[in-house]
Each structure stands twice: as C-alpha cells, then as structure tokens.
Image (cartoon, rainbow over all chains, first blue to last red; front, side, top):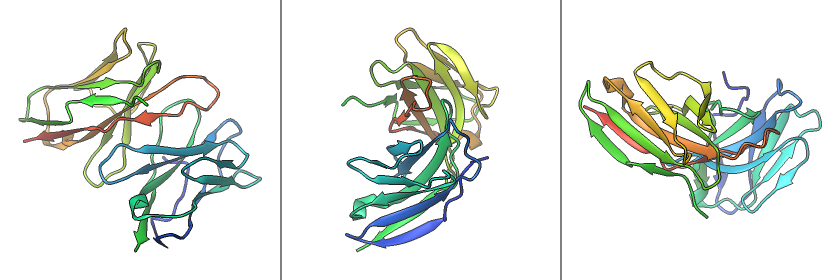
Length: 108
Length: 115
C-alpha cells in the first residue's frame, strides 16, 4: 500500500500558485519524499524530491514539515499545461509505490 | 538530455500470443524498473534490475519474464497474452547511489492492446 495520502482532486486558476498537500505520517528516517506527475497517458515525470529541508527547482518548490509527516508541492504560476495527476511518493532506494494521487485541474 | 527509450510505442497482439517490450535506459544508468498501468489505474511496479541482476519483484505474472543485458537495456517478455494484459507499460531508469536519492526517470511507455 502507498504510504501517502493526497486529496483526489484540486482546482487552481491559471497564473496562481497551486499548493498540493500530502500526508506521510509513517515516513521513516531514511526515506525521501518524491513528487511525480503524469500528464494523460504519458510517462510519469519527475518533479522534485527532498529529505527534510525545503527544496526548489525550476519546476516547483517542496515544503516539508519539521516532523516530516506532511509536505506541500508548490507550483508557483500554474499554467494549463500543469493539468495532470500529481503523485506524492515516499521512497528509499527501490520501487515506487504509486497511490491515487491528486488530479489537478488548471482553470483558464 | 537523453531520456529513456521504449520500443515499440504501440503493440497489438492476439490472445495467447507473445510480446517483447524493450527499454533503453538513460546512458550510465544501471537500474531499470518496469511498471504496468491498466486503464484508469495507477502504475503498478512489476520488476527491477540492478547491474543485470533482478533486484526486486512486484506483482508480475508468472507468464512474464524480464532481463537486463550487458549494455543495460532491458526486455520484458510476455507470453500467453490475456485481454487483461492490455495496458501501458512504463520503463524507468536510475543511477544507484544507495542513499535514498535514486531518482527514477520514466520512458514514454508502450501501449499494449490484446485482442
């Protein structure tokens, strides 16, 4: 079973920041938080990952709470092309267990 | 940058036939993963290989087998195909550092249709 809980769907207005939450209360000390997204039937796309510090790259920011039991993926300026299923994954050095993810709809 | 290559992109087979899916990892990546995504479902892990040895196994049917070759490419062999095998098959590759940061990069997938 997936180790994460995410809302099934979210809406965000184009140009606004999209904040996608994820709960991972059973995360262990050596496990990272990864975010992937899947745009309709394409291969899952890596977005960002982190251990305990907040991370930022050209695609998004990842905010991890101090107790590491939850995190938030932030897309700073959402566009229509960001419409996808976003998966929050807790992983060590092995297979990815995909949960249900959050279906993000970007509204024009 | 080079990405994961999968071939063929689309494949149509009849029931009870066999199929072979190929995956070419990102150059210098040593680990390959296979995932299956049925219609309306989330990807499910099938099997993985590290340095040509099977490293983990998920819900892969006994009718399926896979291997990783000396050039690190991998093939997923599927026999006695069933209608339920119709799915997207994704391959992912990573470079194993062993510190929890083995980011997997996915290919575009092979869409298998079994008639």
